[in-house]
Image (cartoon, rainbow, N blue to C red; front, side):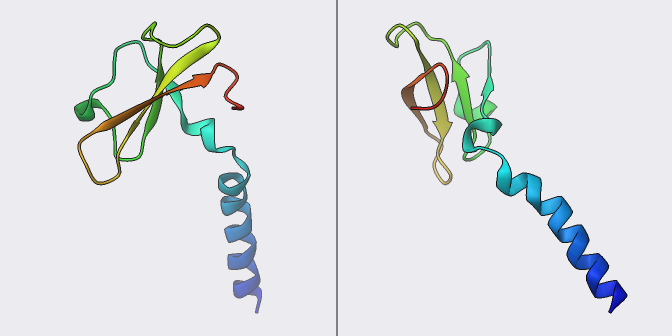
Length: 80
């Protein structure tokens, strides 16, 4: 019984930070334009390519199954 309680407690402690972090917490800023070779599947990065309107930055996301990158202009604060 003690062993099962300890396992459950450790699972909650280590899984809680993963579920509480916002979705954009894993997005990082890069200094060079991303390519499919420099990104992992499903990874998102921010890069200022000067093509987005004022107050916005380009978010590049690599596809999970294909070797392609999608670009979307997002607000700098990341809430929209």
